[in-house]
Length: 117
Length: 109
Image 1 (cartoon, one colour):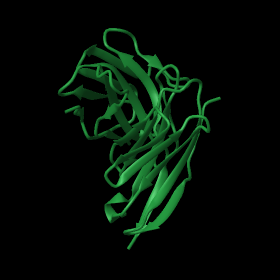
Image 2 (tube, chains in turn blue, orange; image 1 turned 90 degrees about the vertical axis):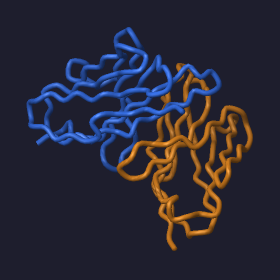
Image 3 (cartoon, each protein chain N blue to C red; image 1 turned 45 degrees about the vertical axis):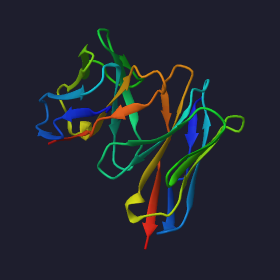
Image 4 (cartoon, chains in turn brown, red; image 1 turned 120 degrees about the vertical axis):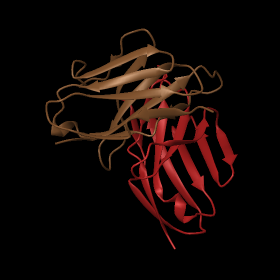
């Protein structure tokens, strides 16, 4: 159990275009989902926390108008990178925190590698 | 401020034992996580400690001392597939994970 999927697993787009990444919890309801970005040889950087049905909470320095997050249901959150630029090229990972009660484990999706040309 | 410290890189020999240390400073504490991350992949959960002491799970064990703000991950009978980055993360009073930069473990034959 506790499977989180992401789609697409990799995407190449041109500068100026927008890209949408989906994160789904397949076998549990996720009231909270987290979006991370990871640059090569660096640790995870939390971008935002989204709760189902409410606006996402963005970390300092993350542009909410550029990285649009929607958490419309208990099993789906989306991250849209708007007007992407080469510096947005990174590994984007989502995780979901379920209503498990016994631990606060985050279940990670497989990640999406974004390359902006 | 909140901070996690762990070594950048460690090298060990196949079949041996290695201990990866992690010290943390957080606003409140709700547990310490260890994750394994292979290159190009997402992290996978290894362990969660919220009480002092040692938690053993197969070849992997994790230790926590809350008074010292210290944890370690112990890997026994190392295998080549254990070559990965190991991420330490502490959960603060707001249940937010504070991530370390990760320790890259290199296993040599």
